[in-house]
Length: 285
Image (cartoon, rainbow, N blue to C red):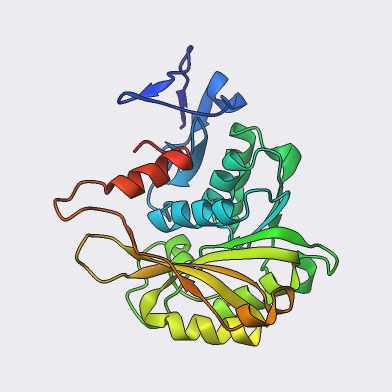
């Protein structure tokens, strides 16, 4: 049995922060939320349906959407690979208001939830959710090219840890349907000339990503380590990649390593820079 969520007047503030961006159609009427799901705030007034005990959107997703849209700010076409419940793509769509999106996801539940969220957020006219394994030729046509490709891939090899109790979580954590080699290969094949591929990946497996990128004839043009608590080593990095052939020769083997992005200061508070990052993608600081 579901229950309705409906504010007759959409509340524009959250703890003193004025929510930016358009009010989506779903916020203006009752939303049916089954007992095993939640409807949670993401960018601005956008919301996303999630399974209560399944995979939930994460800091990795926010960072991927932010990084990609920051370094491809005029992207008119965006591809989200292994898009899950749609968190990365919908945050990016909130920021890139005129862009056309294609997302590809294999899990039934995740596709169902993403389609509900797209309707809530008023995106269906420019947001194509495809139910497929992105490695399969049928998922994307050979002539489909994009200014920006996004990915927040699973990055644990099968058998590398506890798989958990929910199959949706397992597929989002473990490399059951391909690994970074597949993401890099498909991204490279579907980038527009001069296009940008952004993803998040763990620092302790960075050499594996660099090998995959090289095999796909991509160059990591910039990388930003992410420190989750000030003073700790970075656990993940954000990677910005382009096709090597689109770059001048001196840049094809060169990566600009940015200063680490700190999520929380040593006192446990949100770091001032990360607060500014959150504001830029429509989240409260």
